Image (cartoon, rainbow, N blue to C red; front, side, top):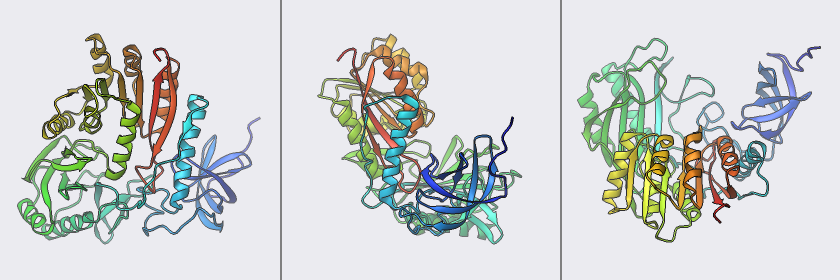
Length: 459
């Protein structure tokens, strides 16, 4: 007999929040049914309105906090509880780190079934604000004119934000100047529904060590009124601007960047420095958004690789070659693999400007290049994996096992796919020794993790 749900859509209920969900929601139960509540924290007692009921769970939004958790603090940004950029800015930072450690540990236990693995406390920031070196602002039209900011949670409605507390402060100035130019020249923002309008996104990249600034205007076409005047305006008002780029995205998609980049002024890249290494960053290339924590992460990855100077290393999903160049200083040879051609060009340029000759960068899918390297006789001492959120393809993991490196260092932004891949490698002779989470994205639900695995067959 089918049992009725204990809640209904639109109903009001009171519940205690017991834990955090993967997306930063608070999770409680009503007669055994899990209920996910945005902006609720463990220890809260909340009155909610149910907004969605599914077979195994429900969702709700807070009407009133009946009893406040000790983990709750006042969010620094007034839009934090609506904005999709920060999910847990209203949580004390120390508690954020504890929950992220538990999130990683839970995924390992639930998905991989690995026991006895040390999950260290999360390495956090002393000052977890203004840490992002890259901002992507959607542009739209609201009731009072042009709006820029971030999407509201679970929607593409833009919340107009004058100042984001986790972004570098220069972004506010850049966005203000472009909005003013659009008003003066009658340039319409792009509308995702009608596919009319011109300016889609404003993107900035900033070198924290160098101070260099890149501004990327993402537009639906190559021409818009006053383009040259906008260049002069930005040059005259933004100190240390080094690059102004037009990115053309004429596709009917919500993907932010198109493939065509036109440099309107200056260089087609900026440079940043980490640990005395220089990195060239172009509009399309991947580069970690939190420079200080990136250094923490890379140093840990280098430590886990256990290099002594004579080793061969493969760095899969190498991006602009940042981890590869860290490794090259202590290895005999590093092979970096990356599918994005622009990132590979940056990686090769980064090797040249740093005088590094023992790093070779290959364009292609990691799951195709790795088996080819194996067939060519490459037998690395260590392999570094830093895949996207979906994790590694099985063909890549099989190639790693075939190569039989003594160590695998896995850098992950998704505890669930990390746990899945660790389980696969564990069944093929690689033991997970220790796990170090790093807080790359304070005030969000995301956590980066670096893992050391050793080959117990060739120990």
